[in-house]
Amino acid sequence: MTSPSSSSASASAEVVAHIEGLVLTYGRTAVLDGIDLDVRAGEVLGLMGPNGGGKSTLLLTLAGLIRPTAGSVRVQGTPAHRLALDATGKVGLITTTPGLYPLLTGRENLAFFGALYGLSAAEVEARTAGFVDRLGLRPHLDKPASTGSSGMQQKLSIARALLMDPPLLLLDEPTANLDPVSADVIYQTARAHADAGKAVVWVTHDLHAAEAICDRVALVRQRVLHVASFTDVRQPPAAGPLLAAWRRILGDTL
Image (cartoon, rainbow, N blue to C red; front, side, top):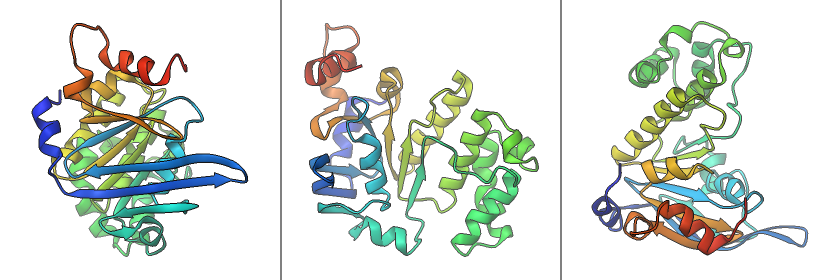
């Protein structure tokens, strides 16, 4: 469980991603409308809000896959879209689907994605050895990805995203529809990545998971309406403090 002291400590940590005045429109519709947000080294930042509020779009913008209509998104000082074009590996992304080649084995998937960054098969093996075991993937590496459970595929997707040890890891509801054990492995992996000095952004609707692993939670509906740290969401005497904060800021949006 993250303590209030770790939240305050992260306030002085390196800013890994800086979002300023971010606006994204499709036609006349503003999907994101004036986002200002920093993501710091050593923290898991949760993004929460109603469906259609722009959370996943914000994540894809951080990944450099969508360019802003206005404003800027920078990762370690470089525009996010430039990092994506240059295939630097500085940002790891997990979307709501695993993003694997189903007919390739787990090992072949990792080798393929590693080759995109100029890694040999041997380098991929060396880089993934530790977290492949931690994620429990070793018995599945030589089976087609399509034969694995949704939990196994999502864990393989996590391994793919961690190949380059990215300073910024982006997770879009990676535990949705997973059993509690598989979900816990992913929680622990995300938390360990942050504890190693990296930054993690986690889109989730799971209030309990957010309270368990996040240092801060941003409530988003087209813009950042509130950023809650453990020092303000864990105020007694209300039960379910993050739920209370959700209702106070966003209303009954579910």
